[in-house]
Length: 216
Ligand code: PRP
Ligand code: MG
Image 1 (cartoon, rainbow, N blue to C red):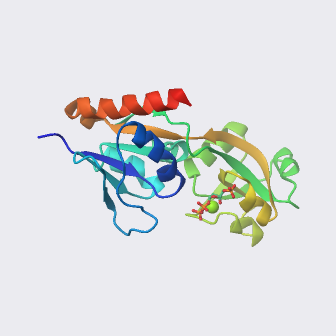
Image 2 (cartoon, rainbow, N blue to C red):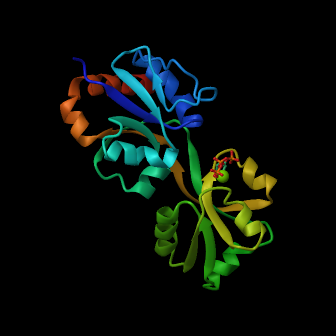
């Protein structure tokens, strides 16, 4: 029997921007996650299925073999740690950056110069801790799971560390980007055991993705 390949994706940009790569591998997802409530989506290929998980959970599903392969943002991979998986390809999709942002009336440069202790709200505690410690800035991190932009507005934090794509969310909330920490894109991740046990079908998908990226 052909091995069943399970691919973990998250809804939104990662799903949308992975579709053309899947098409290049001859895989077409047969349901639209925006209209369906299903978490397991069939494809035109009986040996391939897609599971829909939260973006931050993709590395965990691949680590534990809940999925053989997945598409995860570099942000999610850094927060997770990347144990138990290979990362064969930077897919160069869902590009954005992780930045530090503050209220327009907060003098970040001065606070840093004066060695102030900063309260930083973020979902990205690993990335933030590493960044500020390398800079020698003392921070108290406040872990949030979304809508980080609110924290400085209501005085709960001095700064946020969050993803910036168009910058519209920052502008709409009178926040300004004061540091760009790193560029982000999505990577293909593969469960280490699956790559041995299901080598041929996984390699076909990886190679098709690699060819599709090289054409862009
Ligand atoms: C993401 C991110 C920023 C925004 C950036 O939030 O956390 O808030 O998008 O995009 P922009 O620069 O194009 O405005 P998302 O909408 O995913 O919601 P969440 O943070 O509440 O999860
Ligand atoms: Mg947000």
